Amino acid sequence: MTAPRRRRVLEYNVEAGAADQPANSMIEIRLPRLADAPPCTDLAALVIGPDRAGPFIKSHFERHQIIVAAAEEQVVGFLAYRTDWFECTFVSLVVVHEEWRRRGIAREFFKSVEAVSLSPRIFSSTEETNAPSIRMHTALGFTPSGHIDNLPQGARELLFYKRVPPRGMR
Image 1 (cartoon, rainbow, N blue to C red):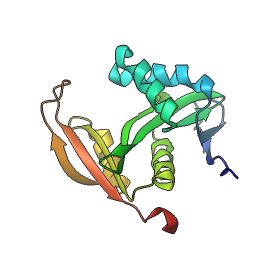
Image 2 (tube, one colour):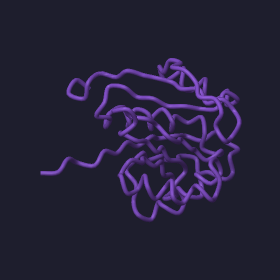
Image 3 (tube, rainbow, N blue to C red):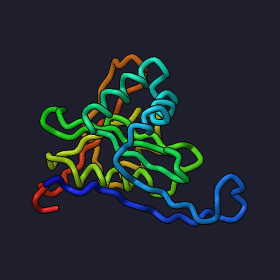
């Protein structure tokens, strides 16, 4: 017997004046479909570059370690994670299309990862120059856990940690 697919739906009422979005947008947080790979790759390219985006998304799709957000049948964001990082879950990339930010999508992504994580230890990271991401991690209950210097992008990478109840107690 297989477990049912996890799916969350957010209802979001867009304020008047947002001409590019309907008045009642439904945002679905779900497991990816094969057709989601190209739009996820396009979103990833905005953050990690086009050369790395394709292989990155392919590897996460193959491991089934990606969660997508869709609105109006379009992918508007994704979260990619790993479960083999020092026997912990590590969120490797979160991308939400600029027009869909600040609507709870990242919060729902992290709730979904917490629900499926085999480990009670969840790590995530961001560049030290990314103030919105640092604030988001803090708001989601993550605490600083160190940093990594000397990475190719030049900026220090800040690590964040959150402990969640063991899987059987969630």
